[in-house]
Length: 506
Image (cartoon, rainbow, N blue to C red; front, side):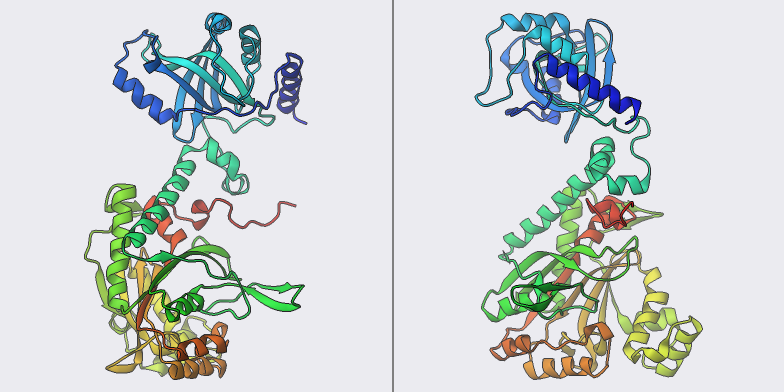
């Protein structure tokens, strides 16, 4: 035990000897600090002025992040999730509080006598959580301050927080101890508040458009809906192998068959693959399906969803990201996959011999890859780095898209788009394939070795569902974590995940 921790334990025992519970209890009715600051501005208080009426009386709580003891006065900077506020503790005011009528809320933490409150205040440390009832005022220097008439210790911190000036700066420590990162680094807390608001904005827009939110299985007997390696688990009671879903797609399409014409899900998905600044094995996907629509409708919807979230939550459509400023102002560019391939790779995507030669030059194991996968690898290497501002890449090679309707003028192309922003795929959408015979043939071709090896699965129940007739539809998946990265300016996916996957420390 370090000296600092030992000192905090000693203070804990002193507080208990005073007859005070160092872990408080219920403290209802606290006003957020941001609302108190706004009220202070409306009151128009002059330096040195203290309110006396109910309009200036507030109850507030939070974590102590700065402590200044100047004898008979203690000034605390206290932080809640809306920001910081200065609390003032005066020995004189707390002692006078003993003679004031009690204002206890039923079931709340008991309040000690004023003299005891002052003794406890002298034993406070950074990181402690406190609550006060008090009168709003300004110090002689003009600092808005909530002067406590009653003070309650709600939770004693036994470990010291990071040094205030530096915060929690070690990247790995921030991810492992996110609970510290959130209260020590206001920027981190703001990122997760923004993430919540972005998701709420997307949900609100979809509900306003007549979509309904549904839940589909996370444990699936057959994985599907994407090219990815699954996590495998086992159900003991049924003695069967199960997979954590890599996508909710095939179950959401079953909803379309059942007559739920507009559905969406914020789905937790799992892919047993690498970890990088853009990838985490567990992630959040917004996936939706709209009957009687196609991928053009999905492009319009995607643009509206993201633009509205940027405008309403972030407050602007030009948002810095890394070395660029991303302009989300609509309309966004729409470019054909084949045109971009020729422009940046230098030959048509139909020239497979040249594509394989280029893949070999890059050190790719092209002999082990299907033609379409080789083309996809070259696109990833040569084209994606040029896609900075929002760009819809449309009409993909059909073998890469076994769940997608074919282009009526060219069956070698699929009616699919991917949205790229700052070189990263953010969204993926199709005009959905609803012909059961073609769907079964496409999945059979995957089993025979065409396309990506991770999609070599056959879902007979899904094919049977299509035989009951699924309406023509547009489908869309948006990577929520990546979208939040872009809108909040975070360059690593772990910065927008509260608890990203980490190796154990020991």
